[in-house]
Picture 1 (cartoon, rainbow, N blue to C red):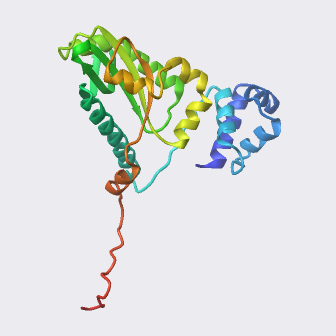
Picture 2 (picture 1 turned 90 degrees about the horizontal axis):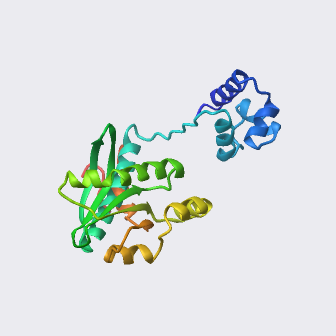
Picture 3 (picture 1 turned 45 degrees about the horizontal axis):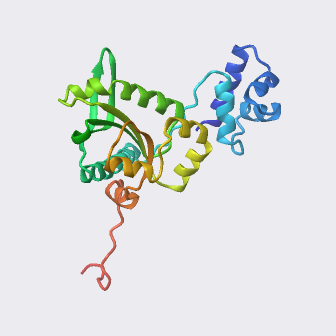
Length: 245
């Protein structure tokens, strides 16, 4: 991240909006000193959350990117998501659900893709699943998931399924960070996905009525990392071998 450019950008936006540093500090809920440090590009000791507050106060977006081995990071992220989806599909399949992965749709101009669309024929229940390897931006995820669930019946009928019930499930890769993030946003997630822990697996075994649930699921990170290593690999010589032999 170019700290100086970030600082200059924030200063330019503040001036463009005819705000003083004190005004921006008030909007962001920070001290004027903190805003001044950010504008000078002194970001080493600035919490990322503070930077986000300032950018949001300016009605702008903060876009941070991590790069590694060219496209290696994209492959790593894709592999982690694929592994989590695979784990979920195996779980649902064992409970009698028919699953479709990466279901693209275009309904009255509304386009998108559903990570996992699952069908439980005995109860005519459709499950619209969002799969996340990290706890996502809550509002963006909720609105997208609601939209997909709203279109669920239409999407399902195109596959020959006629659901009596449409349910929603958010699946998140299990881990301390994910659980802490959900806890920090407890009011939002509790309202959107009230079903948790034992209630979700019990419902998946025998779906009765609608569900709005959140499920933490492990998927084996070590295996994903081994499959997606890129770049040069050091080759170790077998013990006991000699140079030139």
